[in-house]
Image 1: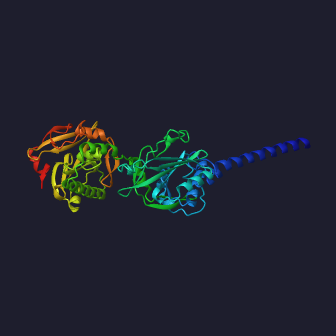
Image 2 (image 1 turned 45 degrees about the vertical axis):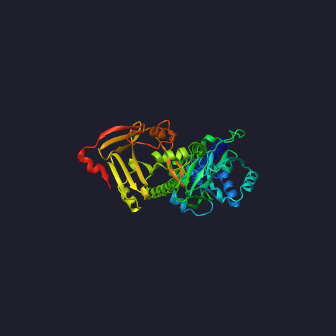
Image 3 (image 1 turned 120 degrees about the vertical axis):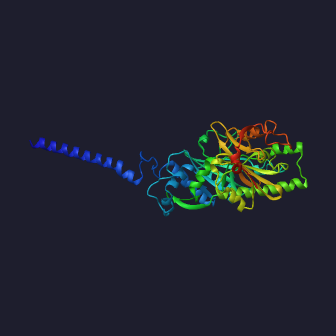
Amino acid sequence: MSRINKNVILALLTLTSSAFLLFQLYYYKHYLSAKNGTGSSKSKGNRIGFDSTQWRAVKKFVMLTSSQNVPVFLIDPWILELINKNFEQVKNTSQGPASDCRFFCVPRDFTAFALQYHLWKNEDGWFRIAENMGFQCLKIESKDPRLDGIDSLSGTEIPLHYVCRLATHAIHLVVFHERSGNYLWHGHLRLRGHMDRKFVPFRKLQFGRYPGAFDRPELQQVTIDGLDVFIPKDPGRFLEEVPRSRFIECRYKEARAFLQQYLEDNTVDAMAFRKRAKELLQLAARTLKELGVPFWLSSGTCLGWYRQCSIIPYSKDVDLGIFIQDYKPNIILAFQNAGLPLKHKFGKVEDSLELSFQGQDDVKLDIFFFYEETDHMWNGGTQAKTGKKFKYLFPKFTLCWTEFADMKVHVPCETVDYIEANYGKTWKIPVKTWDWKSSPPNVQPNGIWPISEWDEVIQLY
């Protein structure tokens, strides 16, 4: 009997010990590991821990750039989005070890950083040290577009992107270059024939599918997941720029061919007009920027940029386009305060609005407001003498950045379609005689303003 009792007691003790051990393992897995960030969280999906491949790669990269004084800053949209949602907490985080990894441990293939190339002092040395630290790096170069307009310098190559891989994670270093107008530009990431297209999943890169342009960001240093990094001081604004950053270069080669065929007008009057038109465009751009109103080069000004990388000297005006939803009631007053009196106002906000301001020496600024329909866009025109209305139809378009008159300005991304709508297939041939009521192939009659509305829709000054 005593022998049976001993076996029973031993079995009960063994069962109890096993149950307690299983409870400890369960508690550690589901409570302690989640609390301390050492396990994965299915609910949040972003607390993998400091042993993650991506965090180790970022840490090594930050250590490398810091030791070599490489002025990089974080531009990764995914991480900046997380930072922006928790910005106050990030700004108030003190330096030192973090309790959990919330940002750099988010599963992804790349982490994107950027640098301003003119601040980089030791490019070749940095590249060698990176490889000694275990990174495998790919350098992408291409021609410097800033020199395409200079025959003797055209073809000079500059670095555009670095992709550095450590284990299964890669750092994408986007090289920003300064451009006229105090903005930053990065180039297209285009692989050459000898480069390994399986080096990383290039199609997942967030930068480099096309050239991009950004306002120069003000930076601040913060501590993220225990690492000291620089980020844009206003992450939200930078994130807004990313999807709208596409840049189109002026076509210098085609412009040279055009000017060789038709000869550039370098008379005193032509040069004086181009100078005044450039100053007027710059003044208009500053005024609209202060208002927060986006615009693009339109009509003859857009044609001059695309065809000859310059202002057409016989056009006698500067043409801009604005979407009607961006109209602001104080726009006329803003231009008047900038020294540009209103010359005429045609139409009204809900139909065919057009403004014209008088610049110096008979150079005027025309602003056309565009309206969007289901399958096209249009702007209106009004004949002052008769009250006749006209409509100019355009295929739908989006906006890209370009450089013109030493500024970063918008143009239609679908430039050829836009220009052909306005000037036809023969837009490459200069036409000095132009009737705005009949010459454009996209113009059509649009009725007539009622006489009772003329005082409102036809205002001459």
